[in-house]
Length: 335
Image (cartoon, rainbow, N blue to C red; front, side, top):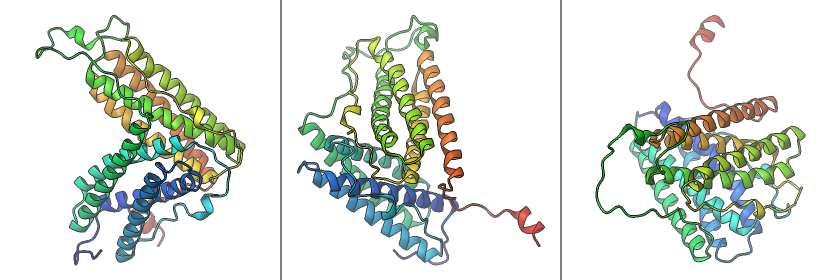
């Protein structure tokens, strides 16, 4: 991938590529492990395609950074995954995981494309977006064919267009609120699903982490996810709407780690960042005051969990530093 002459990468482009390099290297390790354990011959090709996409993207980013003279992030390597470890997650959970990964990256790549300036970078992210959509389609088709995907609730079809006639539409924290609307249901349902994936993943991590401190952190994480699922589920249950299923039963009782503690902590950090973003979008789209208040409260709790995780990673020298601006004061005073 040849760079346009005399056109350096912007800080936005570097930041997006650096973050993707870190996250793709983490995902490669995770999907390699899933692929080494999968027995279902319908799920195997989906995981294999996902791994192929991730590896190609990593190779492209490496080439871009080499062309620019930018150090390649260490990220995660074969030292962070133990493919001979016993099965920790079921095949169906691996399929749900890869679908969730594709869903997240579709949004990330769309933003990266919109923020990129250089044509080769825009083309790269356009290609990444297409691959994510294809991966999502493949995962969804298998989930649906196996009856593993729980669809969002159906709502009655309105017979005519309606306009809001009273401020009571906005509701309040003390109750007596209108039923949830379709936009609110979409965000609530999606966040319950995301917490379900995160909770199952962290349950597994809590069983196998070598460090007691990391195990305790993962237990705290899956308890938070459980609580958040209860809070969000109640918003749907109050209007007799169907809920997504939970997946903690798809975690085995293995206590042998397939991943390094460093990788598992980074995985928890990624999930936390995604959750904060999802809650923020849901907050902005929620018209009912009580729903908005719930998302604000949940977002504050997950943000604190994330901050504590960062401190734990710094303590163990697991947190890789992104490229940053020059410290002009330090340069001046160090002479």
